[in-house]
Length: 161
Image (cartoon, rainbow, N blue to C red; front, side, top):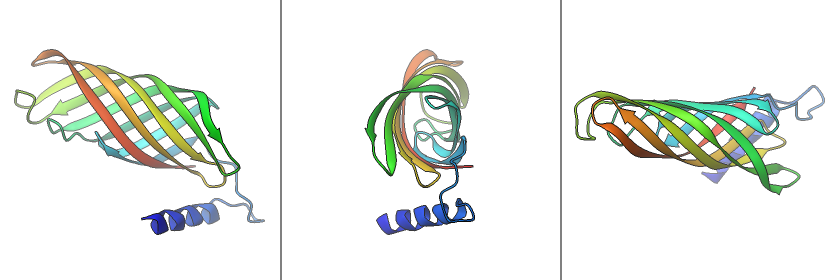
């Protein structure tokens, strides 16, 4: 696994270098995968150095179905700042839409909710990648069962353009 990560990082560096072989400026839009709840694709768009909009869409395993969420996140604290990476903490509000297709006490039904997300971001300086781990609490309105709570957790990786 570590070997695969090193190979991917080396390829990303080569693909994202200028004519002299120096790393090019990292873009503001990242696209990647998220594993957890949900498991699917994710993206992040930086609005400034410490604010971004992030989103994901994918399979929800608890209750089954398809989940999409979007968050407005702030990066208020940097835990570590090294030559090769920055490790900021992030948090923010968001929304979640989910189409349950089984479980949760009913047949297929739709719910929407408010998310409160927090996570840690491993942001590489010399390659256009970041790796993240996050958790989110959700207060949702289920159109079949009423108000309820839910929990999301995930880890992922994004490539920046």
